[in-house]
Length: 159
Image (tube, rainbow, N blue to C red):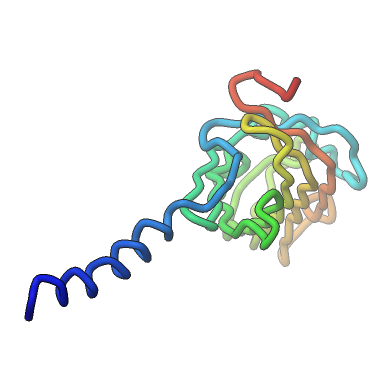
């Protein structure tokens, strides 16, 4: 094959590889602290009792968004939506043990859903839902938290 023929095959391949990682997302990766702005539902006081665990490390690879969340050492994975500023991520934890209103609870499953919107490079906000599920339960262990939050990296909110 001639050099020109090889070049014609190589250029499209390099363009595809080069463009695959260059999506225009302003959101920075790193450690974020989540502050509740408005509580929609929290019958068990989960927002207040887990305040120190409302933090996590955001990672972005192409359109894929991952959050290693301190709350029950959970991992949430999802995608940026088509517009590029909004993302949606989900995760779950099985057989988690935690305290709810001072009572030890063995949870069958914890479901987490987070919707976020980039406000600037170091801040996003949105809605977080957390649901504790337990079959063998005292009723005190079954809880839901729905809240609107602001997440800020390195204590640098948008101006």
